[in-house]
Amino acid sequence: MGNQSTPMTYIESFFKKESTAGILLIIVTIIALTLRNTHLFEYYDFFLHIPVEIRLGPLNIAKPLILWINDGLMAVFFFLIGLEVKRELMEGHLSSLSQIVLPGFAAVGGMLVPALIYVAYNQGDEFAMRGWAIPTATDIAFALGVLSLLGNRVPISLKIFLMALAIIDDLGAIVVIAIFYTVELSTTSIITAAAALTTLIIMNQLKVASRAAFIFVGLILWVSVLKSGVHATLAGVALAFTIPMNSVKKGKEFSMLKETEDQLHTWVAIFILPLFAFVNAGINLQGISVEKLFGGVPMGIFMGLFVGKQLGVFSFSLVAIKLGWAKLPDSTNWWQLYAVSILTGIGFTMSIFVNTLAFGDTRLFDSADKLAIIIASFTSGLAGYILLRIFSPAPKENSETNSEEYSKEYSKESLEKNSEETQIETSEPAINQIKKENH
Image 1 (cartoon, rainbow, N blue to C red):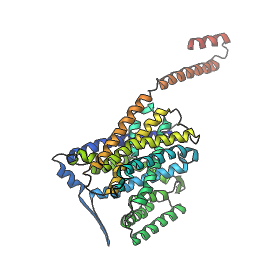
Image 2 (cartoon, helix red, strand yellow; image 1 turned 180 degrees about the vertical axis):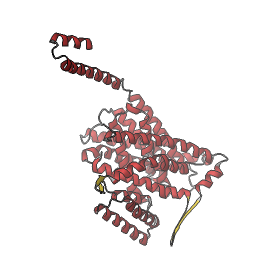
Image 3 (tube, helix red, strand yellow; image 1 turned 135 degrees about the horizontal axis):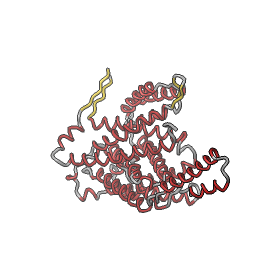
Image 4 (cartoon, helix red, strand yellow; image 1 turned 135 degrees about the vertical axis):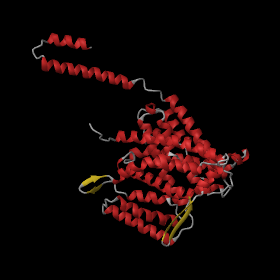
């Protein structure tokens, strides 16, 4: 059969990488918290604020390392998200209306209910209301990482549901960032960005097969968006949607989108997301009082992620299924669907990212807002894992039983074939005797 890839092997490879990312995120978070709250804090702070400057003629971009990671490397992350969304919409699990309905409804509920809970805790506080989108996000790497720890206990259909839901959720986050977290705009930069995006679209229509050309124009787009007032991560999404699905180079057909996605996925999973978590999860626990932790913003975030997410995702899924608009994923029960709904409360890196957009580097909440994200994410992950483990029993050696049955059947067929070829003259009773012995 060779090394031919199939949709199933692609999905299995995807989840293996996500599992690795989830474990790394936990490790770097613990390291960041340790460094921030010990005598090593000075080294940690020095690392975050290493000045990095790029100067090219009149163009000058000077930022501390933490902002290069948040604005630059996270643009690469959103570029990957854009590639995944485009692929899923064109030929994947979001390519038909019937496939979109359940994860689509779930994603809407998973954004609406947490936002309403946050607003209920912070209504009347204009500054705090800027964070309403924080509990609406889901960390796809962490959530799928927890799910993958259960191995074949979890049906593949449930994993696909969570992946599709998380992708739609990320798409919603992109829209929220574009509309609600855009500062004062620069007309010149917007025009440059529009010209770059138009060029990319034309390149797509002309079926340009050079990835380097797309990256070069994409960098111009990123710099323009960075200078425009729109968050730079959106440049990654825009670039992704112009990458052609199928291209022809030197007479050979290939998928630039799939190749780029596959090559980027590992780097994002094991380097970009863990690095983002490392520079943003290091919060000063000593400065957080009980009063601060039970403030409107932290409580809105925690309740939105841990309670709002599971209620929104499960209730909207339930309505869609009961009304006949969608069906429960194959080989899945209601408890498993509810457990996965809890896992969507793992906001972690995505929620921290939206938190930095909403509140910047303010010390107003003494890091209680970020701590609420971490606590809610770990609580959701643990609760979802335990519930899935209880209601997803390990397969009763199905694979081994099937293998044994297949071997017996194969031996039976082989024996009959050999009997026909080498013992044509053998009588019918003799053949029957051989079959009995085989049984």
